[in-house]
Amino acid sequence: MKKLESLCTGRKRRFMMTESETAANKSLVQEFYDQVFSRGDTSNIDRFMRDDYIQHNPTCADGKAGFLEFIKGFLSLGPQIEIIRLNGEDDMVYVFFKCTLKNGHVNKVCDIYRLQDGQLAEHWDVIEHNVEGIQSRNGNGLF
Image (cartoon, rainbow, N blue to C red):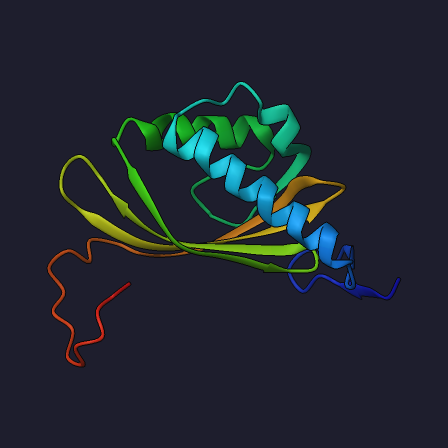
């Protein structure tokens, strides 16, 4: 398989995967969102996430412990996740979603994951906070 260096970590990553491997990655991310983000169940975190999970969100520490600390605080906000699009290519999967918090604020989020050996290995995110009051100038909507 052809190798490519990750721009952010300098680590080697697989570049070409079969369609079934990519489909399995997307399925794992969907299941991760259903179980962890929607139901608040972290009991299977060892199945979903590598021990050396790399986090690029500056407010969250690396590793499973860093994620578990983050998710505890996040779930206390009462998030309702509506996945708009989940897609992937090779070892990368992205999830674009609407996140409505119990205080009424709405965030527009895109999470990007690199998977390795069937587990979440690395995470980036792009978040637009408090979009509930934004009026679109083009009529296309935010989502």
